[in-house]
Image (tube, rainbow, N blue to C red; front, side):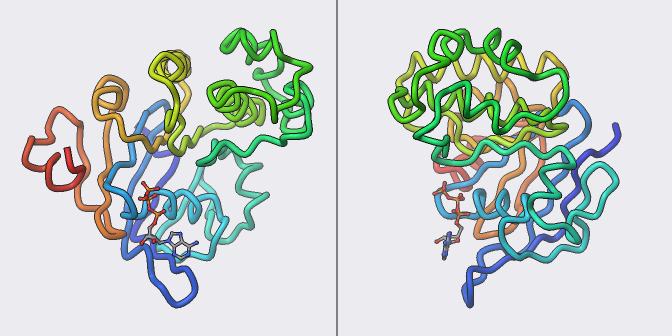
Length: 229
Ligand code: ATP
C-alpha cells in the first residue's frame, strides 16, 4: 500500500513546554487509522502539528509526496488534509448552507452529497449553525471538511459529548466514508467502535508513539496500561 501520510519522530512544544517527543504514524491510501491514548498524551497536539497549526519538527512529515514541514497551514489544507477539529467550530452566525458554501472546493463532495450522508443537514439548510444541536453541529463540521474534498479526513473526537443515538449516526457516516474508500485518521475514545472500523491503531503515551498495530493484537494488559480501559 502507498503511504498517503507519513510522520516520523514528530516533536512539538507549547512555548517552553514540550508536548510531543517523537510521534510516528502513517496512513495508507484508503486506510482508517485510530490515534489513541489517555487524556493529555498528545493526540490533539499531533493533529495540530500535522495540520501545521503549530510549529513542529519531524524527521519526516510527508503527505501525498509533499513535504508538509515546509508548508503553512492553508497550503496543507489545500493539499487535501480535511480537519474536523475538536469542539466542532462551525461558524455560528452562518446557516448550514452558508457554512458549507464557504468551505467548499471543487470535487465530488458538495451540498447535495453531504445531505445524502446527513439528511438532517438538508432539512436544516437555512438554520443558523448556532441553533443546531450538538450532534447536528458535528454533522456540519464533518460536512464542512468533506466539501473541501480531502484525500485524508482527520477527525478529532467526533463523537465526544453526544447522546448515544447521535453517536451511532456519526459512526454510521464514518463507516460509509470508509466503504467509499476515503482515507481517515481519527481520534476517539470508543474502543468498541474503533475495533470495528480501524484498520490499525497508533497509541501515544506522554507525547511518544508506544504501539502500532491492529486492535485485535492489543492485549487487555496493554489496553489497560495505555488506554485505561
Ligand atoms: P485529550 O484526550 O484530553 O484531548 P490529548 O491526547 O489530545 O488529550 P493534547 O491536548 O495533545 O492531549 O495535550 C498534550 C500535552 O500538551 C498535555 O500535557 C497538555 O497539557 C499540553 N497542552 C495542550 N495544549 C496546550 C496549550 N495550548 N498550552 C500548553 N500546553 C498544552
